[in-house]
Image (tube, rainbow, N blue to C red; front, top):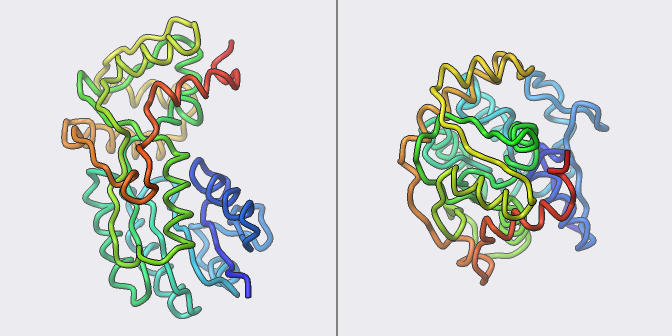
Length: 273
């Protein structure tokens, strides 16, 4: 019998890649979205049970982030509902250096079913998808990060790890802290993007307040901007300036280097004017 997988957030950066990889293996996959069948919204708990019907394992992401108020309550309620529906494995996408995310990790681990946590560094694809794409296209990435370094993580690696964890034994009850293979400052990242794209992209350090005001001005919803700036103000303080080897431990190959990500992204034309 084909195992059925639920990908919560199946249109997001990691979720859609996880779903694609599972489908490539010929496995049954259901993804959630507001316009899906059945529809799913974190803000409407009545939509949760229908997506869990007939599912064995769940790749669980939370929008917009596990640090927002109410996230832990939602994760607890969803995990309890999943266990009641007979879900055998919950794989949680978590954030590195986030106490609120770690609280959600503990909730999933105590839910009463198999679990794995993927605690992830800053996504490399933040520069090519979602909130930093327009900044890169405009040639100036302004963030409240100072000179801090980060082991930028390719979301393709996250998807590969998630699928391995979901489909193979030996990962239950494990927490994997996923990072890229080297530390880069945001100025270093901008330089790699410039080299790959042939365009002049520079990093400009700003204050948290300046970043919040600019995000709202450019159309980011105020509640999402507040969550992002609160998150950046804490995790971009040097607490994540270390590299792990959990990607290689799970996949048997090194994590993808940021320069390789940048070359692949540039080849798609995503940063063209």
